[in-house]
Image 1 (tube, one colour):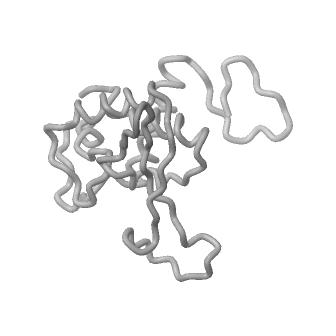
Image 2: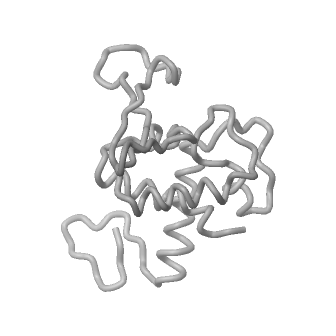
Length: 160
């Protein structure tokens, strides 16, 4: 199983959400055909939730509760997304035609994705983040993960 494919959603979310404010649930609904070229610029199309603060009952119907928004992104992110699209082109698409493929997530445990899996979900992203902290941050780089420290400073090799 390609480790980069498994952790790619975390990598991309980190880079994009640092510049474009977006919730993880919005991020996992990024459409598969998310890149748009206009001259020498490339735009990322993402779904933004329009319910928050509207007083509307939360139902999360994609066609009714989200709007498409386009943001110009730097070439290095374009290349990363294009890499992911190329690497996952032979996998079956998702019911919702989202960017991320659930098969690469379940391959980590040598499992096929469940037949009920319609797309890469918030739970998949959360699981990926947990594994990133455990397998990469803790095991590979030797950091201790501190969940509560109060006002005390972190020690060497601690991360909050």
